[in-house]
Image 1 (cartoon, rainbow over the protein chains, first blue to last red):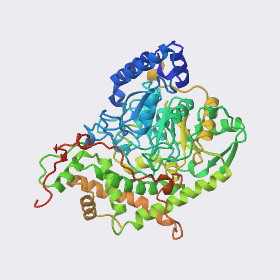
Image 2 (cartoon, each protein chain N blue to C red):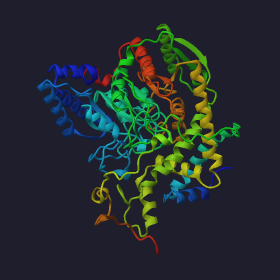
Image 3 (tube, rainbow over the protein chains, first blue to last red):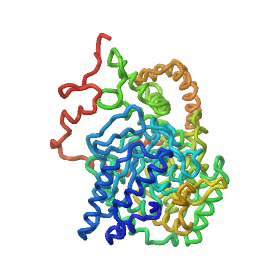
Image 4 (tube, rainbow over the protein chains, first blue to last red):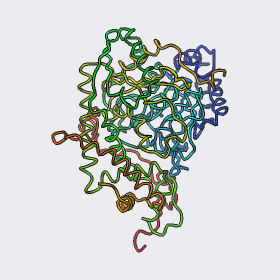
Length: 488
Length: 99
């Protein structure tokens, strides 16, 4: 059994018809995780809990009861979302032994909907990175070519889906951390509107930017997962009161007359020629389906990376103050005073990139520099958000590359933080403006690495965004599979 | 204004990070490069632009409020279960003063 062949809806129907059991699917996923353990996609595999939940789904099917919407769906969840009594590390040494006393709202909703959480996926430490090399539990490898990174920070989630270890996964996206690894690993990745999905139980990085969303083999499955996790939560005061719609039903529409904006700033210097060609071909497909292509501008795009690396790091420096060796996780030994214990715990517990960002954020917020850096960044963020509001008066969705290049080699950007930051240049804007974005595979490079196209939508317009992505996906044809699993 | 080694040491103190000498050296040059890149924001005149601290999409303050009623919480035993050093429902830490 190849997990990648199963859609969420078809699996539910086949379990109900007793053609296949949830236990069987679960064991196939576990076997694949074991077989491809060298990819390092998972930090923790929750074998017993998943098999136990599978047995419960099979009991329901045997009794002929109605199955919940995600019955038997095998899901990996990024290890920065807490699951009660299951070690949650955030990819950091500082949380090497943390067993959370509660479960994140998004994960609780998945479990209530019959999904089988099969494990916690690897990530850049505290979701800070674009390659999943910054994990205290080792780098994740790209299943398309194991010498290459899978993108990040939700690299483990992207690889779990790409390599047939899970039917879908949850990631978090602060500046592209769902969409960029989806692009580099050849799967679908959706960052919903800020506030669409509760962040309760997501270990905070940049609280005004963070959003949980699904990665999946196809748009339809991403929509099915969003149906379950979207909606207001009393435990997250930033979760939106806007009612969620049926995103799977929304896929039935077409794109005739849809106005697709093509912002020229996303096709300039720094964009790889192969990526440009594949993304332009995808836009031609949309045109062929009856969409209207609109040439347009998002004039403040070039300022998005500097704005992001001030706002995200400022928020991170505050959010990560809680890791001090007192209440949970790692504590440095032999400190004589409280202050020494804090400082040594944090120096030994955090990795280099996390420390770099805490330093930058602390600097941006410090007396004498606040207005010049953090204050300035907040103002330019307003201009970037205004760009999108103006743009969406003239178009319904915006089409761009997801990442400027296909996957890069392990270690290639490890010593150059700025070069790494620029791999998020096309995804950061959606976080700053709070709008939803989705990446879907649109082809392969000559070297056999996946390329993704990104569609960006209006606030809370996921229904239209997913419909456009689904239509494009159908027009592009069958999804591509890494050679490593094609013969499974 | 380039960031100096002294600045880096001061920020590390504020951030409660006891950096090694090698870390302080590499952060000085790396943060200098990043801040140099960030300086392009000064090309923009933002005198009349309001700052954006959060997305306007989220529930407004009135909606986000709830009645101030006591809710069940973790309790002392569960709340201290992950602590590196706890005793009798309290967190134990090295001495705060006199060090």
